[in-house]
Image 1 (cartoon, helix red, strand yellow):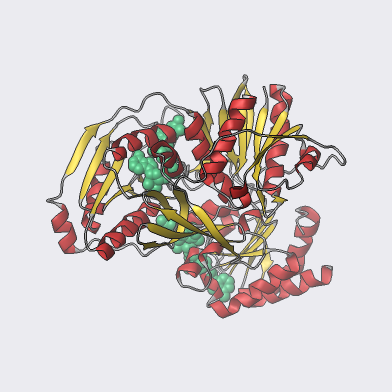
Image 2: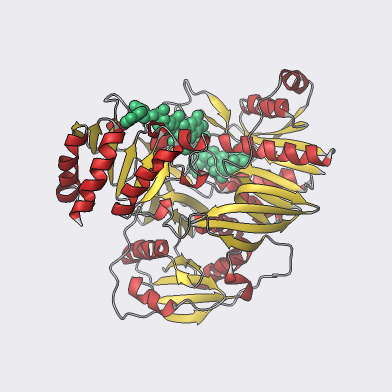
Length: 323
Length: 250
Ligand SMILES: Cc1cc2nc3c(=O)[nH]c(=O)nc-3n(C[C@H](O)[C@H](O)[C@H](O)COP(=O)(O)OP(=O)(O)OC[C@H]3O[C@@H](n4cnc5c(N)ncnc54)[C@H](O)[C@@H]3O)c2cc1C
Ligand SMILES: Cc1cc2nc3c(=O)[nH]c(=O)nc-3n(C[C@H](O)[C@H](O)[C@H](O)COP(=O)(O)OP(=O)(O)OC[C@H]3O[C@@H](n4cnc5c(N)ncnc54)[C@H](O)[C@@H]3O)c2cc1C
């Protein structure tokens, strides 16, 4: 009973979220007893043999010149062909922008159940049970799969990437699949970097997020400085995004991004339920707020009650001193 | 040109979650139901395309119990022309079954654009749109952050990690909407009056067997109580120490 993992690449680089999926696949393979097989779509081999270091035994390489950029329909045809070929028990995708787009297409193609944005996968009595946050994180839904194959996307950062097994290689073979690239399709014409090469919020190890308490867009320079010394990305509440102080890509919460960094520092954010929905699975939460009754303190591991305009510079200075 | 908008009715985000007696579903007592916030962008997107073209029809469609008619009526008040209610009272359809039922109804309408939200704010599955596109055999762009129609080609942008994809997609196509795509309108008084005369066609709908089974709905474990390390800038040194030595995150 093999476990299949869709491994994503962009610009010839395998993305780290796929290593998290491979790590989880290895854990499942220990129970289901099958090999971990990866499938990757690309125009040229991004160094797939090295996926052995992350736990893949075999890699199916779906090569197509149109796969230089993401193509949902084409990738889905390839992954469906991989499923038909290896007959896996479970198929895992990273819950990235690519995985979220691709997995439902594959599920429809192979007529299988899919659980998205999972934060835990366990095997109970021989059956896979997936846990996923619902109702804005106010509840956890556990689902199982009556069919022969189960599909799941994994919330980025919710699963640890495995230790690299240095020097281990995977056997790479070409995957045969049929897909008509000349049929009408959604074509990526360009990828423009909006966040200037910065780490995306969903994959950041640390996030410093600002709310309405920041008082204006000009003060976000202070947050950026703290983010700089921490190696963190900057996030924002919806109040801030709706006011036009920051771009939508930085919004954390139910109608923004769901993040699970190691460290989340909420500055001048009250902690509305819709904001908590996007960040309450963070490992360590710090809140800085002048109102001791702010709901954010209920989920924070550490809080400082005070004026952020005094606390922020002091915090940045203190962290600078550590280095 | 005919456009379809798929609308899901969801519990308001302020809803207090109580698990029902079956241990697997939401206790519906006291829940306020609203249009999925992302579907408001979908309705607005379709209305803007129609207004620009100066002609066409916007058909809204929702699968669910009798209650969804309130939400359908609301989208008619925003300006949609007519509604289809796929009636199904069972509380636990899975996304693929829903997509199949929607696909069957949409196929016969032969739309140029099918609009959905990027995900439903209750179970946040984000599945129905891309599933529908595969079932209908139409190209699809998910999580659209901008949309412009030029002739029979749509130019769409979607956010990806660290950037934006610019995509061209020929019609007919399926689009799922992100926040920020547009500014959804509020129904006008005139719209609300007009909506009363518009039709909601009811169709009994069978969902077939589920592809996913609910095992349990649980409240998340409470986070271990945190602590206020202190007040003002004076507390910073203790915070940094705790982050470094106790939490080991810096
Ligand atoms: C359908 C729906 C979806 C939503 N989705 C999201 C979402 O995705 N993300 C999101 O964030 N919100 C979302 N919201 C909005 C949410 O309900 C809140 O309105 C929003 O999160 C508030 O943002 P805030 O905390 O920045 O602002 P406020 O609630 O105004 O909080 C500002 C905080 O700053 C503190 N403060 C002020 N000055 C200082 C100072 N000098 N020093 C220290 N602290 C200070 C105040 O004490 C206060 O706690 C959504 C709402 C709805 C209805
Ligand atoms: C086993 C199981 C049990 C469930 N039990 C419950 C339950 O008790 N109560 C409950 O509320 N939900 C329940 N659900 C979830 C839910 O009813 C379906 O999964 C849902 O209808 C499919 O939509 P989604 O949330 O997956 O949509 P998403 O894929 O997140 O939604 C994307 C978009 O699809 C469209 N869309 C989605 N659903 C509909 C619809 N019904 N009609 C028209 N357009 C739609 C909308 O445009 C929406 O923005 C259950 C799901 C499973 C798997």
